[in-house]
Length: 392
Image (cartoon, rainbow, N blue to C red; front, side, top):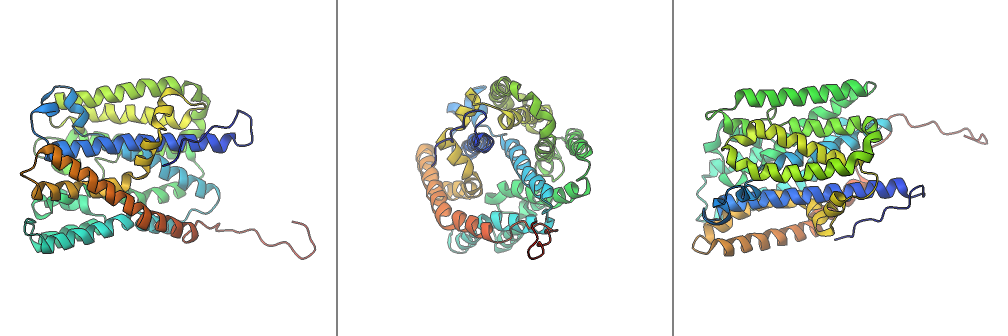
């Protein structure tokens, strides 16, 4: 766990780098808040009793889920920012980018799938058929998990349905680099296209949602893409937004309060609110918060809070936690069903914490070091070496 970086005095040599590091720390913290909300939502849904916080109006919204669009926004912004840097350096290679993403995420999915396969083979409490397990693992490793759960939910394992999120991400990350290359010279048009696609995805979801279609829409590649696309649009439009950075502290504070209010309101609007009008408001307010974080020029109350070391650490570990927490909840629920919900919750958190620490040491760090020396972006047009005796 690291402390938040200190921003260099204005005008100093390290100002730009330190400010960028502070923004990254705050974005990590935002992901940390989001993963906490996601885990609480799943614990509440599967292990906690109906009485207690789940029965208290408005407060139950804090453990009611619905925060995943923040992951889409932050991921879309960070990934697109990296792609734009590669584009400006003439080193954007869609295939290399895709392979790096497959390695990065696959480093978590492969061990998970191996663990699930072993549990399915030896655990008598695991009731999924071998065919169901093979089908689910195959779709998960090919990043088509969401299509399986949309088209054949009864033919999929119940403990891996959360991975629809990673599948949608990966599917759009095939398209996004190509879109950036196609419109590289027309950044304003690229912004309009990304916002237009996000609006079309939102409209599609709002028009199609019903009691009969909601489940498929909840994991649909296009219907759930608005957050990711708006995060990408934010990265492209950042140069035109920077003059408004002085307003970031106020916008960030208002957006943070509004997000908490929207989360508390969500369960009170009905079971499909997360796909209906509430989802539009949530994504737009979350976009305002992300924009405020990346545009802030000096530390604010919001960015200081989000930059708390423990929150930033959780944000950096959010992929591991997200991938593993759901199957662990199901496993503990089967094997500790006679224990209290509090005991089950503690066991889940301890197991997930252990997996996270182990993964950081033996998976995340080795993969990061490997990627730092392999599959690095390379300029497509390297400058020719100077002739002997001639200064460049």
